[in-house]
Amino acid sequence: MAFFSIDNIAVRGVVTTTPSRIEENISYPLFGEGEAEKVIASTGIERRHIAGKDTTAGDLCYQSAQHLLQQLQWEKDSIDCLIFVSQTPDYKLPATSCILQGRLGLPATCFALDISYGCPGWIYGLSVISSLLSAGKMRRGLLLVGDTPTKFKNPLDKTAWPLFGDAGSATAIEFDTDAQPMQFILETDGTAYKSI
Image (cartoon, rainbow, N blue to C red; front, side, top):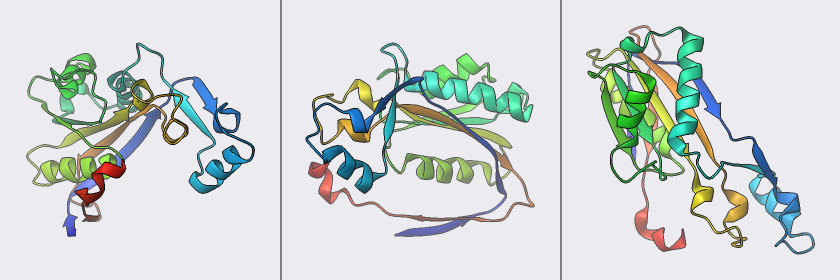
């Protein structure tokens, strides 16, 4: 288990974007009588957002980032790093973080990195971007986390389809010597990978 603290980092804002199409788990046609209620009770997932066929995780994160930058009134040339976390990147090559740097109009000096991670991706991404910024050499960063797993899941698989939806988020991170330390506890167990 990795337990560590990161100083000098403040989260300035978070914006999420979800597609407009919604599927209700209560209406999932492959559930038998009472099955939908059991899944909803055990997972808490009542509905899922489904992206259109041409909408990518990068698109959803782009919308979130644009909105967040406007809310914070941050100049685009003040962004020093961008990290994109996803298991469904827009392409195998090039990195989606590089595409987003260009689409957002961030400076060419902006550090850009893709991280492939699923469920704990936001926390791992936050630990990485905070570590980069904590020294004070870079002042502001964007953590973009998004996935469009419905593009790769089978709608007829009732063990997985009702659990996954599509979304994108943007988190603004800033170097701040007055910020309270961030505490992280991270661990990994790759032994059960066949269960996923």
